[in-house]
Length: 558
Image (cartoon, rainbow, N blue to C red; front, side):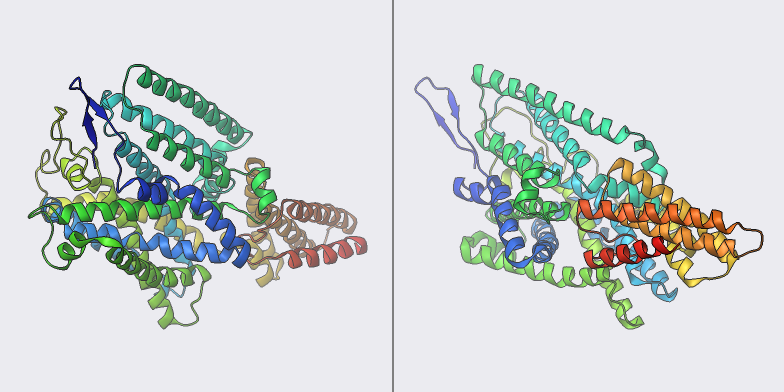
């Protein structure tokens, strides 16, 4: 892996090291963002965006399996972190199954399980960033410049651009702010109201530009002083964040190329990059592990990975895809809310728990098994420079091995607080149907008393939609705002049926609300799909056009 030559003066001239080899790295790691972008555009144009998202869902869960294969095959790793690895699946799966029991026995919709996804939504970007940073450090491994300086410069350039893109993207952070309040009552979005979000986005962009100037200066300094500059690292940085910025941040070019492009497709593009890179490095690791005497678990693992070749590699990928297909197919059924009877609800709940646990453990395990400072990782990836005087660490050093009780207690601190917090806050709001689905409640109830209670919830929800429109105007907020305005007008009519209400004032108020609702739908049409909101996820262009016809006619008749 580490390539060095010695010149006539006796000093070493450093060459680029690779994870696999130049061709494989070029295809599956460095050029992967560009290849994935072409793939997504082609498949979305030929088969539709849903096909792209479905394929990505399979690959995304498929790349969890290599983590578990690697853990199983590494004898030293399993001995060192024995209880953390063996007890890892128990607590997350048990916690989620506890929620499944509550959902099914309580007669709730199986789709309510999805509130737990917020844990993964928050953890996933950090996981992606750390993997990219890890690859940059691998490619820069032979740089003799002080390791602490080089690593901090790499982390700085990755972190600043990553923060800017995640803030500037159309959906990720706005959705997170919105869902934390809508599902859990956390008022984080209020911190970004009043133009604060725009300021944060501008400041993050300035920070990214400043980091770029500093990073380029560092590379120039390295070159001027004879230090190794990894072109592979620089190219990976440019392709990854270039494609990420192009596909995540709204821009006129991608809109012209594909009008229906959205954040989900951009996430799929970079997600496929993450998957291919991960498969490549696990393959390299397992092959290196199996060829070190006594390091790998004997049997099928050692036999297959020591042999290597395209046939074994293809079988390895196929096995991972089968795993991804099995879990993602059932995972998607929960998203679709496909739960016609209790038996299927139990099955979908169990599959959701398995998929959730698989994803969480992938993030959790990768947080400590891939640290490049450990000489075991360097050995198995072929990066250990025995002639180097730089100190190396081992995962056998430091803290002594945990007992089962200590490992379980530590995992309780990891997993229980977020699941418990999200569960308590979600179900406390979900048990209040007026607050969670105010429009549906107005339709279900017709009495003036019920209308008064619903009106309060409608107006509260309307305030949130207006705040989100100020933070990030999107079609779904305009369509929900329109429906809320219309239902507020109906609720006020029911309240006004009581004696002593002025009919003229009522008509004037209805005209104002209807006109505002119509204008809100028209704005949604200008922004384009998707139009579905919290209480009408399947709203289409035809639905909006029918609403506009009915509401305009109703406005004329008032």
